[in-house]
Every structure is written in C-alpha cells, then in structure tokens.
Image (cartoon, rainbow, N blue to C red; front, top):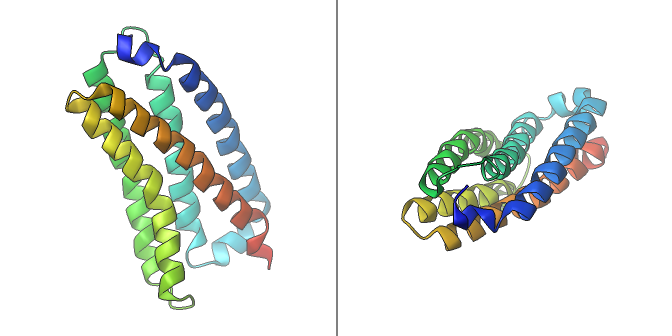
Length: 164
C-alpha cells in the first residue's frame, strides 16, 4: 500500500463496512415496495443509480485497502469504477428528463443529487492520476460520504415517499 493510501486505512475500513450495510438495507427497502417502485417511471433507474454509487464507494474503499496498492493504480481503478457508476446515473438522468409529471426544477434536483457523488469520485480519480494524491484522496472520501447521503435520501423515497 502506498504511503498516501496508508493514512486512509481507518476511513476506508469504516466506509466499506457502513456503505455495504447501507447498500443491503437499501436493497431490502426496495424489495418491500418493489411493486410500487416498478410502477414509477423514474424510481427503478434512480434506485439502480443509487446502488451503483454505493457500490462505487464500497469498491473505492476496498481497493484503497489492498496491500501493495500503488497510488496511480488506485486512481485508475477508481476512475474505471466511477465511469461504470456514471453510466447508471446518466441512464437515470435520461429517464428523469422524460418525466413530464414533475416540474423542471424537481427533475434537475433529482439529477443533481445523483451526480454530485459521481463528480467527487471523478475529480478524485483525475487528481490522483495527475499526481495530486492528497487532494484526490480527499475528493474520493467526499464522494464516499456523499454517496451515503444520496443513498439515505433514496432509501427515504423508496420506503416512505413511494407510498404517498
């Protein structure tokens, strides 16, 4: 493990455990209301994007714990994982943009809430690859925290709001 990553060991351990637990809870929450979620034009894709972002946080944390991990390799791995999660988010944004039942402002808010964590991970990966590991690792950490916040909001939607 590189020296830059060593300082993030405890954070990564905590985030991997907490994020994995939250991902499991989100999946359970979705399964409880799956019938209602599937009736929604936007919730299935938003839920998939939310889970993909949580998986991104899990992957970023787990890869940061790998013994012998080189900093540049970690940046490349986070970049690839971010691009995969971004594909889910882009699909969700396309679906959200077609939802004529809500105002433009609400559609933008839904889209931005999913993009913010992805943007933080992307910035972190690029900074790490550019040789600014300290700032990049902070951005990845911010992305992880934002992924948890976004997932909690999605969990609220699939547990409570979907039944209103």
